[in-house]
Length: 193
Image 1 (tube, one colour):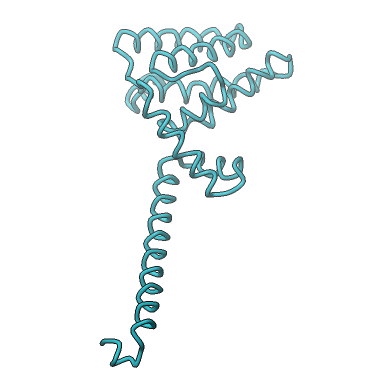
Image 2: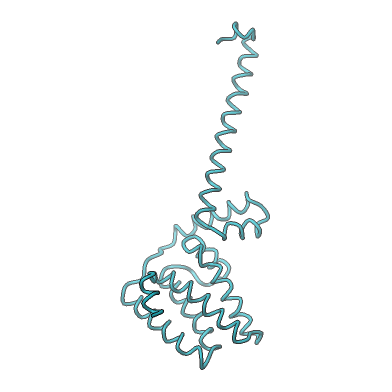
């Protein structure tokens, strides 16, 4: 088909081609955007939805999540050397054993231990909100635990917690701690036995 077959003037044919090209480009952009959204949802899990709510929309949230990923990619995130990992695991076991006699102290120390592990792994910890955002890049399934545990630790400092709150904080900290140090399912099963 050409312009004479359609009965179009050369100018109309150019306009038609420009409109068709714009439709194709727009369609490709929409497909790319959907794929990007799916990748971010898959990578960040529930943190994606939390960020959409916090940022007030998908576009701003996706820009924030992409910026986080770029920022964290610039960090020197590293696994723990075996000796350090073993030291932290021993420290965690000790903390758990002190919970019954001193739950407030155990939660306070758990908060500090998680911060030490984050620092040892290469995550900055000077600002809680930014630290939680940074963690969400590599640990999206447990960052909610970090936020919940930290909230309880802050309420503990104000004297606004009960023993059940403190127990929940330890559960939240443990989930994050185990993810940060790389506790396997086999190690969890062995520890539970």
